[in-house]
Length: 307
Image (tube, rainbow, N blue to C red; front, side, top):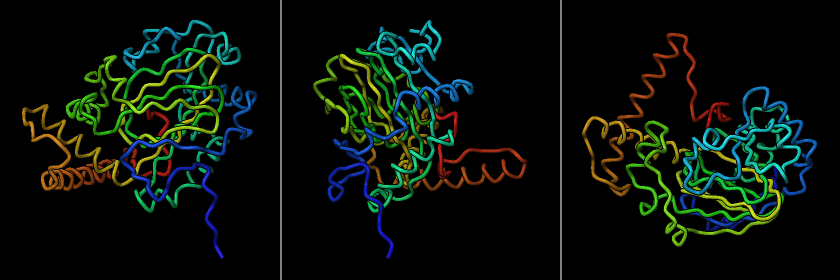
């Protein structure tokens, strides 16, 4: 008799809504791969491939997320900063750890344990990814959005996670989401301090975390001690669908055709999706015929250049 794995992430799975923010708990804080020697070894492997992003702790909530590393560069060697993270004054992200042979197993272990619960509500899990954040006290992850669904799990230390619902146009407009999906550009996403009052705020320690659907705006602030956090990310049929509609609306807007706002325009969005999906499939066939490689969000794991 086949048995399901015990979920390593705990939430109200019966009431789980894939497009709603939720607090979670987890069972991985004591996992051996989060020991500092293991993380240092991982960082060495990733640094050789350019897969560490870092900025100083003078970056603020409103610092453009994609430019933080250039605007607030860490001036000490990355491995030295990581080894002495308590005093480094640095925010460090180990990118796409699913590309590492060792840590891919951790990504599969955690996401595999909740795959049955996810598939029951939001089928088509793919493009699995993992991101480990090792950060000094009082560092900030600037306000931004991402494409993937995300379970952000606290391993060591404490931090505050501010997160807004993925359709909250008070903080990120539909136009900004269209721009993000069509050009992977966050220029229309701007922080204002009054947004805090509109957020879910999760004050998390080891064993706690949050679920953030695709394009949920978020901001993270580390407390008074070093922090280790890991995000487990993935796409589903619904993220691909919404993303393609946003992308199509964005491209049409660039040519002066601004369609009615809102995801509630069901028939229009349905037509946009099927038209864009057909065109996308044809493009991929042409690419394959010419011998060119093209990444797909239906692949099992995220590509190394995913940000």
